[in-house]
Length: 361
Image (cartoon, rainbow, N blue to C red; front, side, top):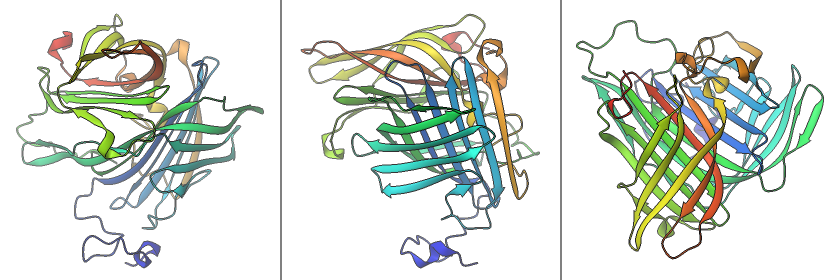
């Protein structure tokens, strides 16, 4: 099965590009977010292809004036992984690893043109590998890059230019995750009793801070790292450590979401800390994560597009489809020998099942 990608020198196996190994859960995804410097507006985009399900899907979502507006799209992939369009949502790679553009053609009252330009070279997160018994539950790689954002967003005829100074984060990930229809036969005996995830890309005036952790239900990390990168840095200039910890987390009553927290990062000259003040919640189901009807990789038809509006004041944050969030947060970075720095970023959280350090069952 030959596709357009086969005319590029990018093969890594003897097979055509259309085939990505033998695991039906292979995926390849783009993610973007951005936010105004005053925190008044937040937006995110997800675009995924699932070669062995022959599906592509894309999502665009904006928080504006108390409503999370969402546009979902899914189509037949036709095995063409180089076609970076799904219904009205498309991606253009203007400069690899540095500058990308997302276009949302006018559809059901939503439209946008957004350019994301990297502040540093992307970081490569440690490979994520997790098994349930003998079966690979996750096996993927992600690059992450903080960005400056420009462009415009239109909702129901109201177009707003993205404010000067808007920043955000983009990532690319590929590998194996649960996608499409869940496997009806679980692994026996089941051994994965919970899933804990925090991901914190943070933007400051002259640098970026990144942190992530996957941990088991007892709080033991199985994948974690923090990175500090000054603007313009390449990988050789990054500071990296696996010893950073998110501490002093207080949960919002009745939810699995943090009210506050402090990230402590050991440095050669002492300890840096980042305090978090979450003030806006973006529900990741707005871009397909955990969505009951728009699960990533799910077959919807040759092309299906749908708008969804989420009234944030009426959301039940304790409901499982709302556990996965990005909390836009004001953050303060304290580094020994430097004045405290104010910034902004996301505190992404997903806690499914028990997590004993937070007394969650």
